[in-house]
Length: 329
Image (tube, rainbow, N blue to C red):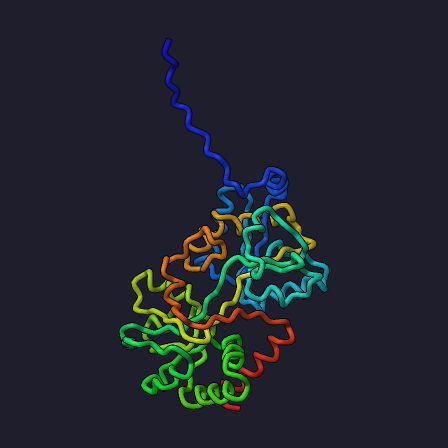
């Protein structure tokens, strides 16, 4: 006898990152407090995907790295516990005691050099940095291969924007060229080109795309790609030295929603999470996830890449040095 047909919908398997020993606890907690420097355009869709799969409500607090670090330290001193998971490029500025030691199954996919040996943070994306330009204003048949070559383009004088807190790039010039030569090149750049400081990398990317500036000597590649994919007249090229700032993740050792925090960490490190991260141009760390666009890394060419990180003391030092160059001191 033939089997009766059924119209019952097929069960969809849960994503592999949803851990049975965490999902029930996370649902019972009911919420997840995310502190992040990722702009809302990218961050909100990412966490909406987490909400959809888990039913856990995500409260998203977005601010720049320095503001979030300060906020967490103030909360710790006052005994408040507002955050569960932190996603910024400055996780290591927090004292180790404010970062929980943890492992989740998907953390095994993170390359060793992009995770903390003490298990207090994990990389989740790479912020590659490169010069960017407005393609209507600048025609680049042979882009400058290095910073010295950039300085030969005197037609850009007075048409350069720069992030108002671009101290990592400043350090990269000194690291690459050495203190004496690097210092002279930076002095020449700030004195001759007179770059205009812009408050934030996203605002800088938009200003270049809008034609307010012809070029920027350094910006996040993902932001340029995002605008380019919308049809904006902007692009970038690989130039030595190029820097990487890792987007890092840490958990609060006194997280109000500790089960949800661990589940969120597993999500961010999973193939599904890394794919979601890369959808907006962030460059994933997993080798089994293709960047968006696929040529995002190959466009960097032969540029020498420096991975940077800063202790709180180093950050203060390089912030001051950058401001001194910017002000012509």
